[in-house]
Image (cartoon, rainbow, N blue to C red; front, side):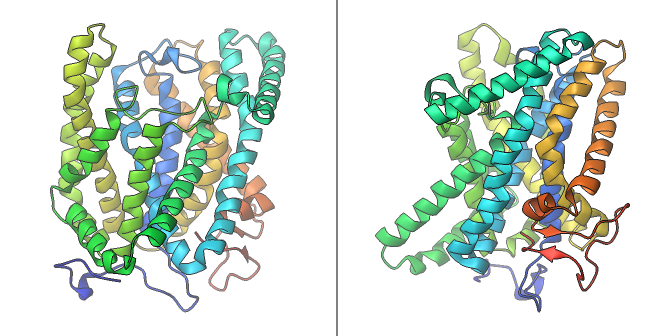
Amino acid sequence: MLMGPGIAATELKIPVLSSRGSERFHALDALRAVALLLGIALHAALSYAPGMGAIWAVEDRSTHWLMGAFVLVIHSFRLEVFFLIAGFFAHLMLVRRGLAGFTRNRFVRILVPCVCGWLLVCPWVVFGWTWAAMKAEVSAMPAALLQAFLVELTQLFNLVSLAFLKQGFILTHIWFLYYLLLVYIVFLSARALLTRVVKNLPRWQPRLDRFTHFLIHPRWSILLLAVPTWAVLLMMQSWGVDTPDRSLLPDVPVLLHYSIVFTLGWLLYRQRSLLEVIARHWRFNLLAAVVLMVPVVALSGYEWLPSVANRSEIRLGYLFLYALMAWSWVLAFIGVFMRFRRDESRFWRYLSDSSYWLYIVHLPLVVGLQVGLARFALPFWVKFPFICTVSAALLLISYQYLVRSTFIGLVLNGRRYPFAWVPSRGCGGAESGCLRRGND
């Protein structure tokens, strides 16, 4: 691998190939888990953010602008972190396993959870929305559940008959896996095309490395990264990154946005020494992220103003600040985890393994708790932590006893741990009794 200019080999403090031929980036594993878990917190906060009643199951009587700011900020960077890490590990896996092995692995680890997760979760998500629409009466729950399963059957029929091309399709929060699959297809297709069309492609690889170094190495790299993001954001419908959860037809701006982030992660794997650069700049990026939050949150309210003229002018500046803030948070989180969380940890290994399952199945539970608590006159600072705590506890229990040592755990995590009543060290040093299919 070519080192970036100005980075000595002795500075490279990244994982190397072990005797088993595997590579483990503990910091990025932990960060990927945090990106997924932040999604659970974001969904738990939506009920307490002002003005979310139009898009969410229920808008609680206790809303606060702090919850709106929390949702705005988390939404700006959490999936960007996830897709960047996905690009990084996709490059690692393609190098290690080749195209055939990569395809098989992604089929099991992404496509199967996407399809099965949707079949499992969709009716319960629809139930939550339907129950909320029926004013959360307990007597209305059977009718709401029946309607939810009828909706899923209709969706399956529309899928078979291609009616989703006209009527849309309820992807729920599983849309991120669907778009990850689309990004894989787009990226690998473009890569294969370039390999055939461009002559002497290996001679261009050092130039790509220098370009990646140019993007990441400067302390002000957020300015360089924000420009293409800003250009794509201008094509979005909302003031921020759209959520394409209502159709199987690809949303081109959203797909382009996450493809760009994925590509940067892919290039970053070739220049892994730049992870150390990001780690050194964590204070600057964190400070920039916190400072940029102020104007972004302050200007976000203009999205709902009726004056189109003011919106069109302010939107340009707002989206550039939004892009700067998003990349500041992305680089700050990577830097913090590379600086402080690079060593192997029993706790973070467990959290990383469980986060995939937690995110896939969390939404019905979170929405159910939100709907159930809506009738109680309690402040948001009581309800929101309660929902996060209770849902996390129940989800972790379900992972420990229903997933970790079962075939589901093998599919989601690439390994099946021996059953234990309480979380343990997992496979142990020799991994005796642990069925593995890779650690990507």
